[in-house]
Length: 408
Image (cartoon, rainbow, N blue to C red; front, side, top):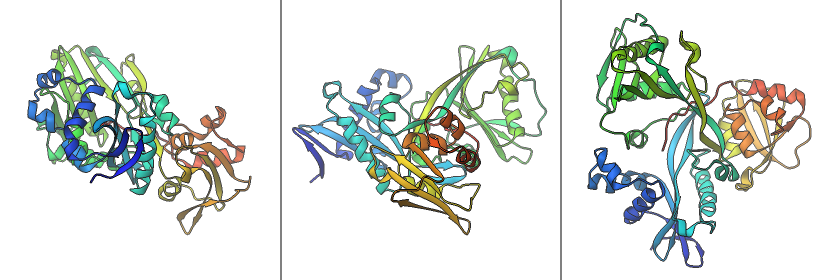
C-alpha cells in the first residue's frame, strides 16, 4: 500500500516509485516540450527514451499529486553535494517541477514545494539549488538567484595568439576518467561547484547530441590539468564547458581552440565564474551577455551556520533575525559565536538589539553564498543592521560568487 501524505478532494499526494515511470516520463516531456521525434533525431531510441529517467526515480525523492490515479503534478529532489567556500555541504537539487495545464491554479505545486523543503531538512540537505523556469515563483518560496551565466561570442580574429606550453591536448572519450578527475579537482577548490557523482554525470550528458567532443590538456608528465567540451557546427565552435586547474592548462586549451581557426568564424560558449572574460583577451571588444542562472535556498539556517567556514572569528555574538515564511524552523533569532576555533549557533528568544542583523531567508542565502555583498544588500534595503556590523559582515563572508555550471 502506497503511503498517502495529503488528500484534497479527489487529489492525493504521494511519493512516486518505479511503477509510475511511464506517467513520470509523460509529464516531464509534456511540461518541458520534449518530443519523441526530437529525441530520435539526436540519436536516442524508443527504449532509451522510456528508461532514461529511471535512475532519477531510483535515487531521488519524487513527490506528486494524483487525480484518480493519474499523475497531475510533481517535483523531484536529487541528493547532491555542493562546495560552499571549500566546505562540502549536502544539497537538495530541485527539478522536474511540472503540472498538467488542466490542474494549474489549485495550489498543487505550492503544497509540493513546502513538503520537499521539510523533506530536505529531514535528510540533512541544508541547502537547495534549482534552475528556475519562473523566478518569481521560487522567490515566493525562499529561493534566490546566486549564480549567473555569461554567454560569450568571440570572432575568429579575436582568438588569442598561441602561448607556448610544455604539454598538449588530446581528444578523449566522453566517459574518460581523466576528464572526471579534472572536474573533481576543480569542484573541490571552486566555491559553488556541484560535485558530480554518477547521476550528476548522467544528467550532464543526457540530452547532448553525438557531435559532442571532449579534449583534455595534459602537462609534460601526462597529468590532466584541464579540458574543453565542445562541438563544431556551421563554422561555429560551441563550447559546453571549459575547466582549467592552472594557467598552463588555460593557455593550452585556448591554443587548441585557436588551432581550429581555419574551420570556424565564431566561438560561442558559457562562463559561470561571475567574471567577464574580456579582460583576459588582447582584443577585448567581444560580446558577453549576462543572465541569472541558478537559484539557491538555505534549508536549515542553524545547521548552515554551524557548517559555514567563517574566515574570521569575532570574540562576540552576532544575532541574525531571519524571516522564512515556508520553513518555521528558520524563522526567529539565531545567535552565532565562536569557541576554541569552532562555530556555535543556537536559536534564542528575543535577541538583543546589539550586533543584530535582520533579513529574510532569500537575502541570507544570497549574502552567505557571496552572490551579493552585505553593503550592496544594506544599500538596497534588503537587510537592516548598524553600520559597524556591516563592516564585520564584509570581513566575515569571503569574496567570490558561486560558480555553478550544471543543469538538472
